[in-house]
Each structure stands twice: as structure tokens, then as C-alpha cells.
Length: 218
Image 1 (spheres, rainbow, N blue to C red):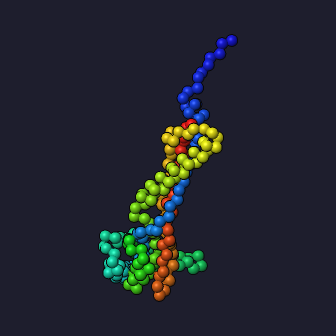
Image 2 (cartoon, rainbow, N blue to C red; image 1 turned 90 degrees about the horizontal axis):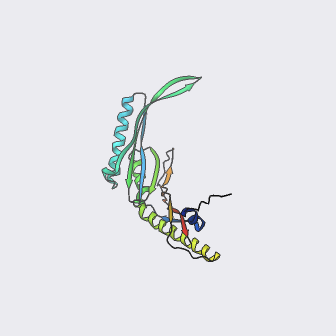
């Protein structure tokens, strides 16, 4: 009986003579910029009075932030709303008042002044601070460095494996897959407002991780 023979294709040989490894590297970096979200909440049974009080207070807050060294182009409104508030008594919805909320985002590169910036805003009328987000202005530089180190680690793994099993490794990979991981901003959040003499803020460090999967031949 005649049987047809199909020769394996090139991919078969390539896969049979390959090493698949992974590499990862994490770098730590101190953040160099921050965004503080803060604002003013006012309440009154008359929506116009609540709005007027809020407008005056937020104007004072913005003026104080500018005097603290934050340029106008780094200040922007992130949320503005007027909502009716209700109490629920014996299963009945009773109107309480109107709440006006105006939140702004203040961006700064003077990390060491975050605490004093918050204190300045509070003294001028801010009564809501919802978050402080620290980040890097140039995360790509750190990521590219981590990526290079991750590739080096992958090669070192493959080289060690090749030496162990007694094969000659081709140093040029046939496939490299990047597993992207963005730098995670550090976020401080609070839903309550507390009055204190000073506001110590510790930004800590950001972790930038790069990972790769690499295929080498031998």
C-alpha cells in the first residue's frame, strides 16, 4: 500500500528548536507632579442663595491657589452640580434644601508644597477634598528603561537554559511580545473633611513595570 508522506513545514522545525522565555523588570520612581481635586459645597433652601454663596467661596479658593503659585491654566473645573436634598421620615420624602457642589482640579509640579496648597485652599473656603493623584510627567523614559532590562533578563534566562542542556543559542530572537503595564498613579482619596493645623502628605513612589515574552532558536 502506498502512503503519501507530507514533510513538516518550516514552522514545525522552528518550534521544535526554540526556547520560550519571559522577562520582567520593575523600576521605582518618585512622582514629580500631582493633581488635587477640591472644592466647595454649600446648602440652602433657596437654590439661588446656595449658588451665590458657592460662587463667592470658590472664587476665593481659586484666588488663593493662584497666590500659592498655581497658574490659571493648571486650574480647571472637574464637577459642578445643583441637587435637591431630601429627608425620609416615616417612608415619606421631605424636601430638605439644595446642595451646590463646585469641584476643581489643581495641578502642580511642586510636590513638596501639596500640604500647604491644601491648607491654603481650606483657609480660603474649600470644604471638600476628594483626591490627590501623584504621577510622572515622563513615564515613557522609565518604562523604556524597564523594557530594556526585561529583555536582558529574558536573554539571560534563555542563555542559562541553553548552557544547561548543551545547545548553542541564537542570540537574536525570532519573536518578542511586549506585555504593557502602565505606571499606576498613587491616589489618596477622602470623602470627609477634617480641619487640622497642617496637612502632611507623603507621595511615596510609583512602580513602573515592563514585561516581555521572547522566543529564541537553537
